[in-house]
Length: 374
Image 1 (tube, rainbow, N blue to C red):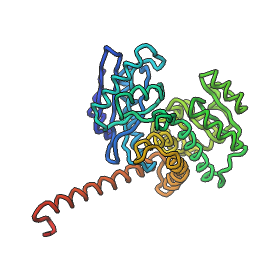
Image 2 (image 1 turned 180 degrees about the horizontal axis):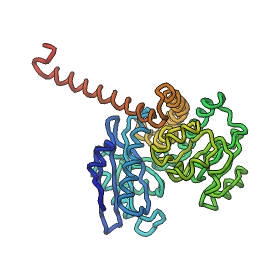
Image 3 (image 1 turned 90 degrees about the vertical axis):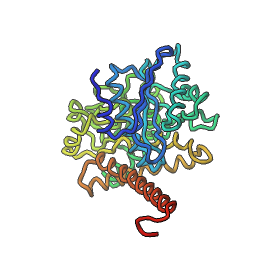
Image 4 (image 1 turned 30 degrees about the vertical axis):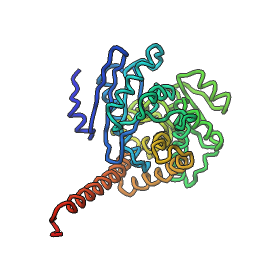
């Protein structure tokens, strides 16, 4: 394996990348802390059988960077981090022991990183970690936590979709609009329910046959194959499963006018900016759109604990944040994702400057003289 971790961290701006290896409990984990200027790094714990360690490292570094921008744009006093555990997400034997050991690892980081539920993990896994660590968020509601973040993630996606329609069509009315939802897991299913209530025409795909049956029986959706989803004559394409589904093989097939979904890393990379722009599609950056989950989970660390009203108001504001990004994209004449990163970094820079100013004032006040002659 030829991976230059420090070079990659420097390129992406990471503060810390930590590897944990405890073979006796099957724990192989990587924690990536991207930025902690606004607050402790928060991001989910992903359990996945990666093809190799290089793929796992790339995933955790890319996702943790996205969490920095997500929390910044959502107005949270949190930084960006992520963790990946290289193991079978369907494992049962030894699962408890593995997560208890990972909780010890979280304690060793002493609050610089807070984990949460993510792909392959659940509230039950979080509750195991909570037995010995306070740095696992998204714990059960009956214990005072926020519980499953999926409904809030879906609500944020829906609000961003309304904003994109307002921007594109001059109306946020989704009645009669055709939306293709790729993936009807937790987030996708909640989103489908909201789209149904709004009167949208809905097509879905998924590899999970039971989820497809549920979506069809409950909401009367049109079910298509995982390949046919790209060929639908839908106005809105909403990726809510795996990332990088907008790529050279699919972009020419998509007939949509808006891309807005709950999945992370929806674009293969920046090479997709040009074809999306050429096709005059409205792209809503994923880390703007899917911030509802981190808003809910992060709410557990507010003074007084988790509060549904506070969380709901923050999630509903994703509508305004999406409009702001799209408007600034036009004004700055740059792709929405580029502009969203710029806006997130601007907030972080302002926080850094305030912190530096406070330090300078404190230093000046503690000395007999300073540069100003006081």
